[in-house]
Image (tube, rainbow, N blue to C red; front, side, top):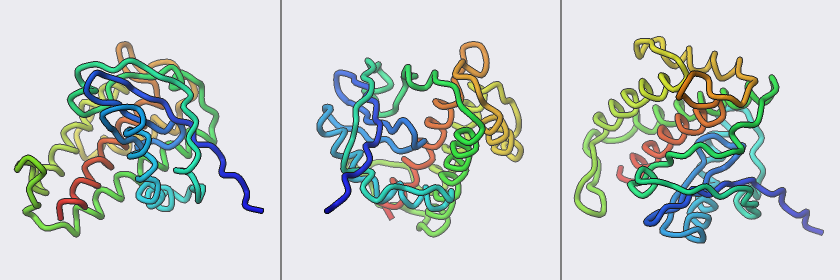
Length: 211
């Protein structure tokens, strides 16, 4: 008898033009679509690609993670959502963390960087144009990801040069226990991990698809 797959908890960020389906417990696994059904369909289709990240982190990824999805929260999106990036902190990210969860979370963020750098490192400098004839080439994408991490790190209270930033991000994530924002007007640790990993992986997969 085939064992029923364990459900993957997902929250939906819903705006007029776009909806994001985001994994609660797998930082960076998120995809979008024009509506809830299409977002969940895209999310499920990327399970094999996210499995590469989990393997890099040394975290067991369920074989059927994309088959049984449990929508645990819906949050209203905003202009950022419609533009093409998640921008709302869900209630589920206010939950506290224990040491094991924090270590796992940091490992998955670090793995997202490794996967991004591996894909970028083997991609051609000039990428195929996107569906509308645009899109950055490889080196500009790499620079964009590094630059964006400065803004993300500041949401964690980290203001350091690029060569020290990632180490500080990982140390902060491993030490996180509270579900409160890490700094005033900043992000809770769960959301910081999600957003940092999502941005790296979104561009990693873009490079992969356009190579």
